[in-house]
Length: 194
Picture 1 (tube, rainbow, N blue to C red):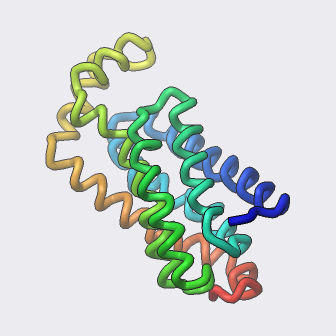
Picture 2: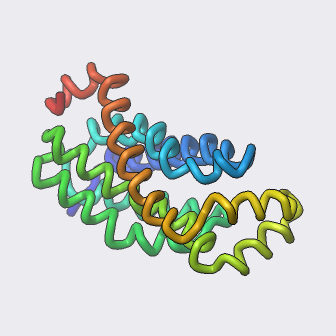
Picture 3: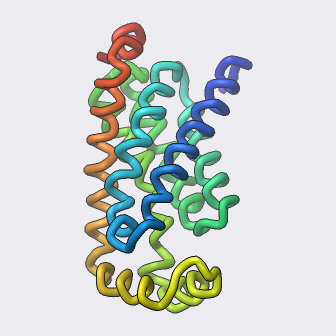
């Protein structure tokens, strides 16, 4: 697997764009508890735009894998849960493989691949469901949220909501892939993925 300088530049640029979109729309979660809970739906939706543009530049296996691992590492570096990177380790290569079976030119494989690529985002809420006490203590200690915010999050996130959030990522990523393709149709037609 050999990467050209152009490949590496594309990976770097689109990883940064993808993470910036995640960070910007992730900040909506800070506004109120309901926007926090809906994050798994709208974040992959908007992140689909830079990802689908990135796909028009992917020509061989490994580029999507590296991007996925870098995204996980950057999210970890921002103080988020290590679960994103942990889940990205199997999911990024799987997404890459799915897309590679369509030679990065199949719309159906690209759509499915992006859904798989987006799934590690569930790692951001793993502490909320499975390490709730530690998560709440960390949130309160940061001074950014008060007990009322924590209580509201608790009401909105019974354990069954974890499964719902996975479904939200799938739906958000699927919509994001369509949104990205619609906004970037000229690039897709040029790359043969229309």
